[in-house]
Image 1 (tube, one colour):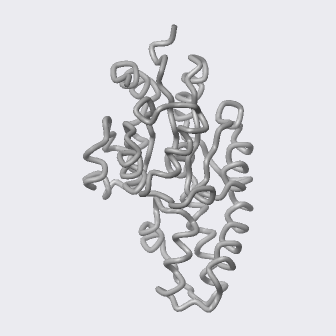
Image 2 (cartoon, helix red, strand yellow; image 1 turned 120 degrees about the vertical axis):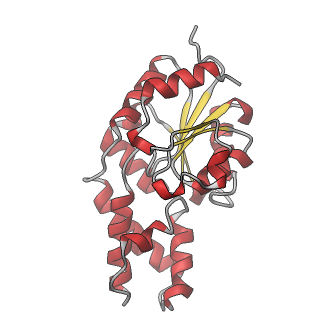
Length: 229
């Protein structure tokens, strides 16, 4: 029997499993430029790390005084992002190893993301992660995105797991807050070093302050084995 029997693992996608933020930034930059807002910088983009694309474009509209509707902005951004995601998404090597390790032990797994269902499917198929990660939840499918717990609770429901038996892997403060609100344990791998001291991360069961540079599949696996629900 696996040392992880009874545990389910839920992955955030962007910045946790895959380094997709550069693609989101480029899609955002192109969309805003088309709508008359040039000069969108990476520092500007960092404000939106960890929240859904829909919420991001909803914040743009008043901030930049955009004439286009939120659905138009969302469609434009998602279209551009999908073009990039299909061809230029990199999986973090240790995360791929971790997914393979968990799959080998029969651990139930899901992806819960602020990305659209189409983006999630495109990334998982394009990277081959869909071989093991077949249960997915998009923020578009629930009432509220992160930091609300909805996506994680829906992922647990689809896995047939109790929230207390789930462990979430997250790179962003809103996601760590969502995991806590869902009653789940969290392994936090901050995408932005400046966020490592965020209070949301302080409640994580395991905080890898160095982000992906510090994460290893073995470290995460051993922590899970020691901290079963």
